[in-house]
Length: 284
Image (cartoon, rainbow, N blue to C red):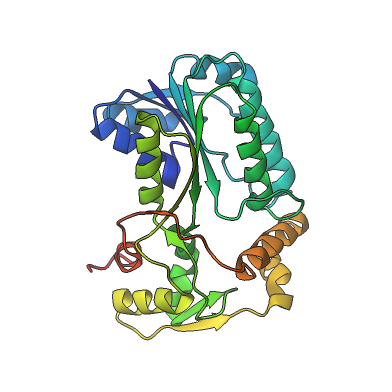
């Protein structure tokens, strides 16, 4: 049995659906029982468990041999670093005595030790926590999600403006959540361990994203770069807490200032153009 945490999100659902398509037994863990019927109709089991309830989560993990571990993002109205560290601690504690035979953890490009750098710090701590377990493990480090551009769709559709914190020509590794999920599912069913970097067929720029939106929406789209000294205020204006705005701004700066990206990567098949076309509801 494969246990999937975060199975109701973009990546986790892709892991579960890929495994189900291969005839593998799957249990999706979630806190919302309203989603149980949809998963059961697909052939999965659904286990209701709060990720912070270590005992309940451990009981679910004990029913499986392999587990996909995705730390759910904290609400941006909170101190996201504090909340995500709390969740990671609960997940790691639940692994003790679980009897699992392999772990696959979802992480991110650029994960590193430190403070106030959002997922780059918290997911590095998840990686370190998995390495400390007496269970074979693999890390699925994902590039910048294509789905992050969904928050721009309405403004692009209405105003023809793609607002971003990156320069128009900044080349950024990006990936479709579905490709991340497919690779994680492969790691769940083979004996590979270690760290894997996963991105799309090639690297893209915000200008590429604008052109993909322009083609999908049949209208001109221009890139507007938000100055760095306005990043914190921009996050706050969209509902981020002071702490979350600071962390996300520093995480964005770490990405923008990256000296370069690795070449030894796993490449997914989903093109940015196709993903954006689907997001915009237009045929390719």
